Every structure is written in structure tokens, then in C-alpha cells.
Image (cartoon, rainbow, N blue to C red; front, side):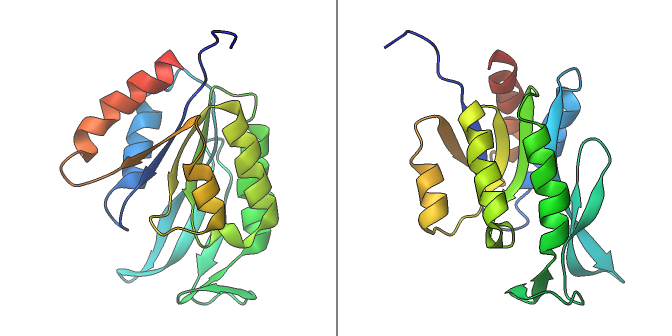
Length: 176
């Protein structure tokens, strides 16, 4: 063993609407002096009702991950996945971030996993040891492979710990 400290990826997990993305956004706000790439998601709401999800990148690109009215071939629940925006915006942003200080991947979930290109980009990003992201609570072969990685810590987000996690995550990222 070389004595080199292994870089560490941090993936947050928990039920929907527990605050995982909000937590990531608060961490990004506190590490503004670092180069951050990747993507995060945001709800698309119409008249107060969730209709889908947007893809947003730290450099300002935006697209639609999924929408109830989208006409795509991949369906997750009531949403149809926009694989073009997923691959042309989210995947591209992950790959462009491989040389940056921190790579945001929000999220490794059912919608994103319909893309083989997304899966490949996630593995490349994890190999850098610089990922801060979210991973779905449910398990499958791909997410189980990620959970078994020695360079990846999975943290469960709860209503009790979500506010105190911000500083812990910032500390981990800054020492990484």
C-alpha cells in the first residue's frame, strides 16, 4: 500500500422530499471558491403541482429530465424521461467536471439510470473520488455496485440530521 489517502465520494440517500438536493445546494454555496461541475435537479411545478424535473448545471445549462407531458419512450412512474437532455446536459456536465474539484451528481436514480451513457459517466466520476451526490433509496444491481465501493460513503439524510450535515460535508470536501 502506498500510504496515499484514498479520495472519498459522498452520496446522500433518503426518502423523496427529505432535503437531499437542498443539502447539496447549501454545500455548493459554502464551497464557492472551488471548481464545481456536474448537475442537480429541481422540480417543475405548474399551478402548485409537480409535473416533472429540470436538470441544472453550475455553469448555467438547463434542460428537462422528465415531465408528465413529455413524449419519450422511457417512463418512470407518471413521468416520461427526456434521455436527450439527460445525456446532452447532465452526462456532458459530469464528464466536463472530471478535472474539477467537486462533481455534483443529483441523482443516481430511476430516471437517470435509463441511460447507459449516464451510468458510464457516473462510474468515471466516482473513480476521481470527488463526487458529492444523491443515490436512490431503492436498490438494484448498479446502485448496489456503487454502495459496495470502498471510496464511497453513503449517508442517510433524515429530518434530524439534515441541518447538521452541511458543515460536515463542507469539511469533508475541503479536506479532500
